[in-house]
Amino acid sequence: MRPSDRDTIVAIATGHGEAAIGIVRLSGPEAVAIASGFFCGSRELDRVEDRRLAYGRFVVGERDLDEVLVSVMRGSRSFTGEDTVEFNCHGGPLLLRRAMEALVSAGARTAEPGEFTRRAFLNGRIDLTQAEAVADMISARADRGLQSAYFQLRGGLRSRFEDLAEALRDSLTLLEAGLDFYEDAEVEQDAIRPSLKRAAEEIERLIASYRHGKVIRDGALVALAGPPNAGKSSLLNRLLEEDRAIVSPVSGTTRDTIEESITLDGIRVTLVDTAGIAKPRDAIEREGARRSRKAIGRAALVLLVVDASAPAAAGLEKIVSDVDPANVVLVKNKNDLGLHADWRGDHPFQDLTVSALTGEGLDRLRKRVYGRVMTVSDPDAVTHARHAEALQRAGGALGRATGALDDGLPAEVVAVELREATDALAEIVGEISSDEILDRIFSTFCIGK
Image 1 (spheres, rainbow, N blue to C red):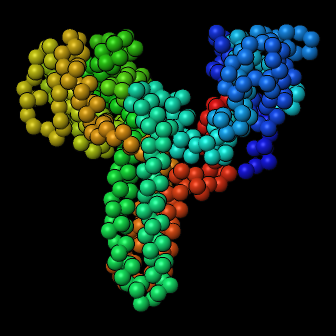
Image 2: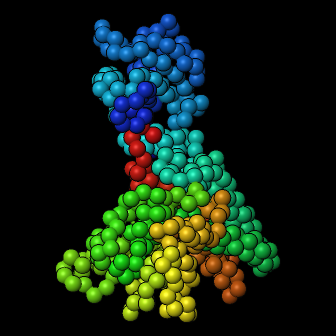
C-alpha cells in the first residue's frame, strides 16, 4: 500500500456535462470531518445514520452553493471499505467544480483514475477480477459484454480461479507431506495425478474460452472486402440501416476505410467498409488498397463481396490470400440482377447470396456473421488478456509438473512447478500483486470510480 492510499480523496462520480444530478464522492479517514465543514442540515453530518439520505445545504464560507442530499457510509459498509460521503447535487459542471475546489481546500486530494475501486480492492471488499469487472460494466457497449461483466462482478470467475488454486494447493500439501517420509513419496506422487489432470483440463478450457470472451468484451471486427463496384458500401448501409457510405455507380467511389458498429444478438460488431482492391490507377488508390489490406488483416471475419450478376473478376482470391479460408464468407451480391454462371462453381469459401438493393438474404448474412464470430457462448468465458496470460503460465507449469512425475524426477521438482502454477492463479484474483500491475489496471478507469 502506497502512503497516498491513506489520503482522503474526492472526485465527481458522475459523467461530464450538464445533468439533473451530479455526485461528489469523498473516501478516506477524514471524509466525514471534511464534508461536515460544508454541510448544513437539521443534523450534524457525523450524526447522520449510516446509508441514509439527509437533506441540507452545501455551504462555502457564508454562501450557500446548493441544496443537496448527502449520504454517509462508514468503514467496511462502504464500497471502498473506508468512510465515504456522497453529496448529491444539481448536475451543473461549474457547481460541481466549485464543490470539488472547496473540499480540496479543506484537505481532500483529487482522486486518481480508478482510485475508489483500487481502495475497495486494497481493503478486501473485492478481488482484482471484480475490480476489472467494474470498468467493464461501465464501458460495455452490448448486452453480452454487460452480462459477462456482471457475472464477473458477482465473483463468478473468482470462484473458478480460487477452486483451481485450492485444488493445486491440496496436491502440493500432499506432495510436501510425502517429502517428510521419503519412502512414501512415490505413493504421494501417484495420488496427485488425477487432481493435476483435472486442473490441466479446466485451465485449457478457460484459455480456449478467451477467444470468445474477447469478442464478448471488445466486440468483433468484420471487414467488407472485394473488387471495386461490388456493392460493399451499399451492403454496409443496409446492415447499418442508414446511409453511412457514399454509393455511386462510378467504380472506386470508396477511397478510404469506413468503420461503424452494429449489435448482433448482444455482440458488438464493427463493420469496416474497404476500398475496392484492383490494379491502382494513382497514388490515392494505392494508399486505399494498403489501408484495405490492413483492415482485412485485423478482421476476425472477412466478407468477400462480389457482383454475382457479372463474370468473376480475375485475381479475386488474392484479395484474401493471407486470410484463413475458414474466416472468409463469399457474399454474392446483386442477386436481384440474376446469378452469373461463374458463381455456380466450386470455391474454397462458404458463400451466401444477397441483394443489398432489396434486402434479400440480409437476415441470413447477419446470422452467419454472428455464428462465425461467436461459435461458443460461455457465461464464464475469460475476457481479459491478463487472465489468459496468467492461465497460460499456470498451464505451462502444470504441464512441467506432470512431465516431472512421468519422468520420475524428485518430488521437490514437482513441488516447484506446482508453486509456480498456484502463484500464477493467485495473480489473477490479486492475492499476489505489485503496484506496477495495479497501476496498469486502474489507470484505465474513469476518475470518480
